[in-house]
Every structure is written in C-alpha cells, then in structure tokens.
Length: 108
Length: 117
Image (tube, rainbow over all chains, first blue to last red):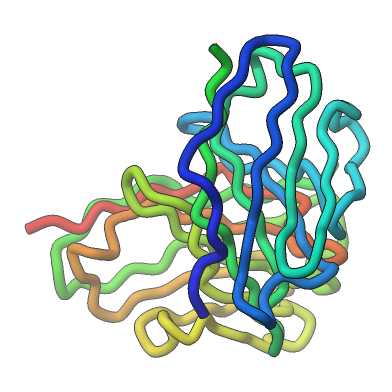
C-alpha cells in the first residue's frame, strides 16, 4: 500500500490558479478521493471529498476533479492564506485508506 | 459542535509502553469510525488504522499492523492508540480523525510523541 504520488511543490502569484495531481496505482484512486489542507503546526482540514464536493465553509475557489487514476485539486484566485501543504487521500480497499505524499503550495 | 480532544504530549524512552487517547464529543461517538494518522517530523500524513467504537471492529495499515494497537471505549467516547515497546522511529505527531462519508471531517489537535534515550 504505497503512498499516492503528488508533486512536491507548486507555486503561483496571488490571483492566479494552480492545479496539482494525485496519482495512484491501478486500484488506489477511485471515487472516494478527499483533499486536506495543513498549515504549519496545525491539524489537517478537509477541503474536498468524493472527488469534487466541498464541505460547508470551504471557499468555492477550491475544486476537485478526477480523470482515470489521477485526481486533481485546483485553487483558483490564489490567496496568501492558501499557502499550506495539501494531501490527497483515497480509499484503498478492505476498510483501509492511503494518503498522498503531499504538495507544498507557495504563494509568491 | 463536534470535537475530538487528544491527550497531551508524551516523552518516553525506547522500549517503554505508551497509550494516547482521543475523546469525542458533540456527536454519537459509537456510530462513526475513528482513524489514527501519523506525521513524522517534516514528513507527510500516514494512515495507521481505524476503529468502529460501536463494536470495536479494527483495521490496520499493512505496514503498521503488529506494532500498534487501536482500541476504544464507547462508554466514555474515547479511542486509544497504544504501543507496548516504543522505538525512536515512533517519534511523531499523531492525529485522530472522525471518518465521515469516505473522508475525515473532524480532526483532533494532535499528540506529539517523542521517543529518546
């Protein structure tokens, strides 16, 4: 059960959009993909679930999608407070889950 | 308001035992799976395992099974993560999280475990 693969880092200027991926083996990335934001020293926060659904209170500039075995998170209209680490997570079968390796988003 | 409150930071020596806790409130604790997630210093999140407090059904990550024990006491709305013999490599922040519908919707504040001789 290997970690899902994410780019180590992405960056963008305020107002720009950034998109980054989460890729698994053939059986890892299904429809039950979620994304978590983690600021330094803080607990993770759910941002997207079931590929593209946003919990109440999450800004609509965060969106998720999936194509084949790759899920993606897009942050549109990047803001300073979006600078954080982001992790994908997918159901891996037999009641187990696996997290991605994490992507650091830097706002230039 | 849903809350998960974890026990405080711990310092132990290699070979010692330890149990940390996660107390839920604001919802029916027995009715939701609770997961434990490890974050080693400077590293990413690692899913460790889950427990359903209603019947104590427990599942572990294949890479960690046998090294930790997950348990729960639904009568006091508390889940536990336990080690019988700690290693230096167990030094990490440990989070508990409530499993909603195929996601982790509420998280504890984390418990820092330091294992050092």
